[in-house]
Length: 130
Image (tube, rainbow, N blue to C red):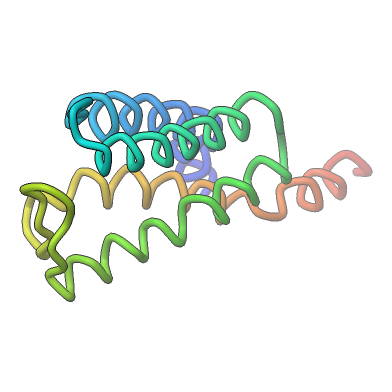
C-alpha cells in the first residue's frame, strides 16, 4: 500500500492533469470562430485553474480531498457519457472506446490519489506521537 501511495502523489497527478487538460482538452481543439467552442474553452480553462489552485494552493489532507471532489465526478461523467454514447459539440462523440482510456486514466489516477490520501493528516498524527 505504501508503494501505491508513492505512485499516487496527489500534487504530481494534479499538475499532470492540469497540463494535459489545458493543452489537449482545451487549446488543441480550440476553434476561435465558434462561439460555442469559446464558451466551452472558458469553462474548461476555469477547471484547469481549479486544478492548479489545488496543486499549489493547498496541501496535505485538504489537497487530497479537493483532488477527489474535483476529479472523481468528472471521471464518473466520462463513464456515463461513454455508456450513453452522447454526441458532443462539433465532431465529438462519446463511446466506450480506446479514445476514452487516456482521460479515464488521468482523471481516475488523480481521484484515486486523493482517495488514498483522504485521511493523511490523521494517519501521520499517531506516527508522530510514537
